Length: 318
Image (tube, rainbow, N blue to C red; front, side, top):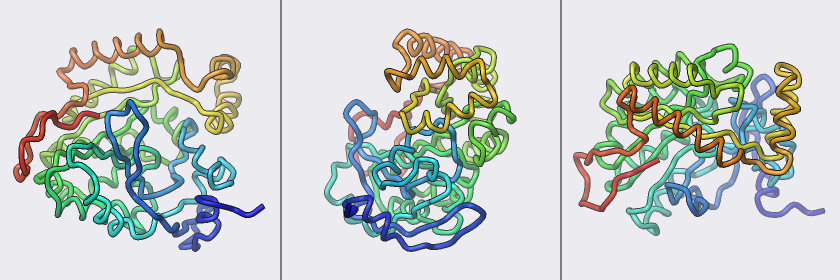
């Protein structure tokens, strides 16, 4: 059967480099801006890479490899760098409303190891450093973000920029199981400190929160306090959701390391990728108490960039 669309583009990608088990490939891209689903706090997303070397066991974005007719278990071992990212962005920004919000790194980490080699995220930031008046958010688990502090400061002078460091747990042993190739939690907290000291608006995201693994009140409180101590301005989180492609990887992890939890997760996510409303509401109450305890925001920014083009209503929220 002939491959079409994204599957054909993946098949035609050019091998850039191989390291350990990881292959890096150049992927032709028709667009770099993608419309988000209704109900999200941002209207556009940018993901410079497809696949993510951090290999988080719970990652929902593994389903994107199904579109390319690739095994979801290849998600961390075959990394596609989107070509002409900066050129495409400069063109596409002319066609969208500056009041609409753009989030970078919603599916794959913009500062995963491939960024050291190919600089696609940096090239995108260079575009925004020449622009004014955009509302931007960035999500990462990587301390590599500190490489670009000077560039990020220039972006933040011209646009509303919110940087969110994801820290799922402070337990390094658990973090290594859940996020085997991501930087250690301590390195991420140090990155938050450096970003804050550079005057950038940075928050910590506890996401995903996983029942009986990372949702303990004491563990979340420790994370909230660590975020505050590192200079974070906001702290928020959300419950895990496990798509069928994510379950293919996550359930074997539970069976090996947390065998008592495996049948509970299997039953819970058999019918839906999402946890129930009661659990999610209780989690948000818990997080709100932590924010109040340490004087943290939920994520709303309240600054006007130095070179902001004009007043345009409510600032970026993520």
